[in-house]
Image (cartoon, rainbow, N blue to C red):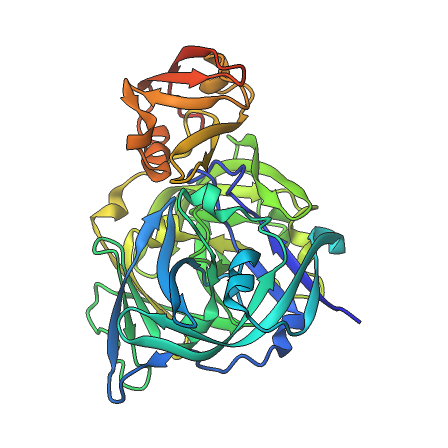
Length: 437
């Protein structure tokens, strides 16, 4: 009899437009809990070592690290606190490595519907990372189909997701300006004592971390306290903040909100609203006018029944990248120290284009969707067209991350696009970016 896993995903690799195509959490719970992954999957390869450093790439508001599997690679992985069990999303990779096939799982989508996706467990996989970090015999879940198409979303080959295995093993410091992870031995780690650091307690539940933050809604009431909300800490989500309005009767949509597709789940598009909250208080730090998604309750909140304790939403990397962030599972705490990025505004996609990277080097960009009523729609751009150049520069000089930043850049900015229709005809489009929220 197949094991059943309740799985919920908001995948910005196709549709989400806040923080430029959200990749929110892939949340595994239920049956995978008996996978018997060791408490500390990773360790330092040399005895007596207490710290290691790993370089990472910041692509599409996501953290990408490299690793060898069974001595082969390197392969690329997203680093995601929202995933309890690490995943191999490329079934061809599993076949090429000859990984052992263990227990099989049937994955359910939102509302308990059968997603049609299957996975199996594989054990005793050796993982080698930079900084002298190894996992001698790690357990993974292997998807039978690359339904996520993470490579097309990120714009480079992505082979899977490393989840809580790394965070349970070390105290992890994320230094976004240096593009480095600093891994500390939990037994010797000493937290900084400077008042410039905010210290926020974490609650661990099914290998995922939750924090409490005060959120002030719009319209703001002078002097009113914010709502204390339980939020998933999610490095694998490109968004800033996501709130589920049915989780607390006091939560409501802001007066100004935009109907949109927020992401793609295993059973289809996840719809909802995009808006802002007046502010988020994280320890001593106040973040004003935070861009926030409000997924439809029928598609998101109902999944929590029987699988996961109540939460009000999640906080993603669009917030965390504004800090030096210490994620300390062993001592149940989150430490934050601001960087100059704290003062940057939260912006959404001002164009209305969903792009997918294709081709051998992921430098061909196809229009997956045009948002109705958006500047892209007004300029006559259609689904299925290929972006050829932007501002007279050939498109292959831009990464998908570059394009994402450009589409978030400035209200009123005009971009000259050259596109190729499916029949081969070329046409130009002048797109004036427009802030809608």
